[in-house]
Amino acid sequence: MLKKRISVSQKRQITIPIEFFNSLGIEKEVECYLQNNAIVIRPVRENSGEFDEQILADLISQGLSGQELLEKFKELRRKVRPAVERLLGEARLAAAGKAGFSTYEDVFGTEDK
Image 1 (spheres, one colour):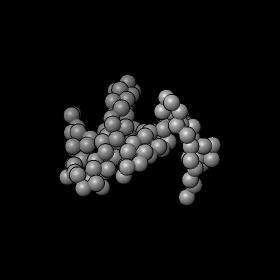
Image 2 (cartoon, rainbow, N blue to C red):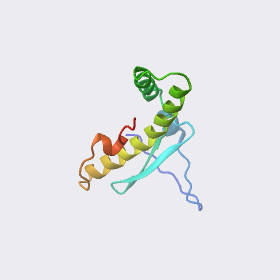
Image 3 (tube, rainbow, N blue to C red):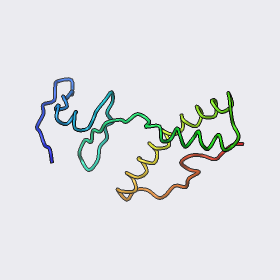
């Protein structure tokens, strides 16, 4: 395990050691949360395209094309990150024994056709 002691500035800022930065492939953003009385900092990954491909395949299979396809794709794509963030939050609560369960519809909503 890589471990390093770093200082905190008067403005509560830290500098991520270059070994950690490079090892994790940090780009533009990190996310930060509390877990087990520790601060966890991890890189934010841009959408790898996997969800995009699945969304497009589903919309095309529904017969959408042209502007209608584009608009529906944008709408669904905007829902991916909030849905994943809700799932992660619920997973953290469940891991701490503080949550019940959620259905698919709870997380992603129902389809309005």
